[in-house]
Amino acid sequence: GDDVARFWSKVDKDGPLAGVSTLAAGKGVCWLWTDTPGTRGYGAFSYGEGDQRRTLRAHQYAYELLVGPIPEGLEIDHLCRVHNCINPGHLEAVTHRENILRGEGLAAQAARQTHCLNGHPFSGDNLRIDAKGHRHCRICVYEAGLRRTERERVRA
Image (cartoon, rainbow, N blue to C red; front, side):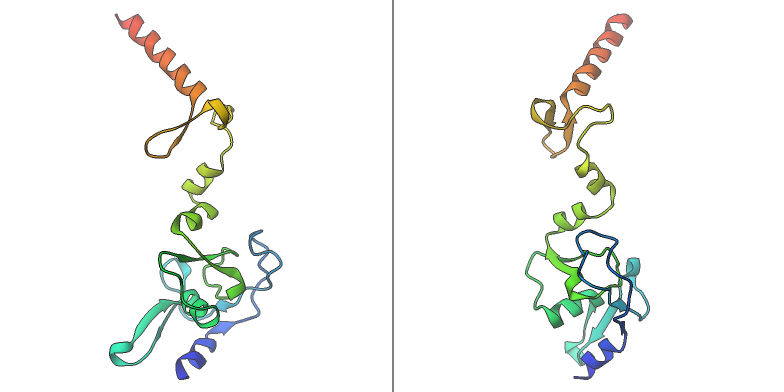
């Protein structure tokens, strides 16, 4: 109806190629939301009448319109990493964890690390995972313990 036509009037299907991310490579150009960007560059779209009026982020509306309902407990990840893209080929329903780990934030960067800051591998017998799920290098933890013991010995 009118909401759908209004929605598409705010979309530019001639956006840039989605080559920024390998996840979206080969999936065509971004469809850019051209209306005023909302929080963190995501578009927002309000639709419906009266008590039934609802607002979604533009990419969520596009996903629901072209793919189907967003499954419970999942959120929409932009494979192209372009926040105002609404191309359903660039959108995927994933867990919050998966969405975060695919990004460029500190948590994602840390999760992709294969070695500690001193170059020791985060693998095999050298990997220790604490109760909070953080990874630690056993060699570095052991060496830090030796240094602490030596400092305490010198003070005594």
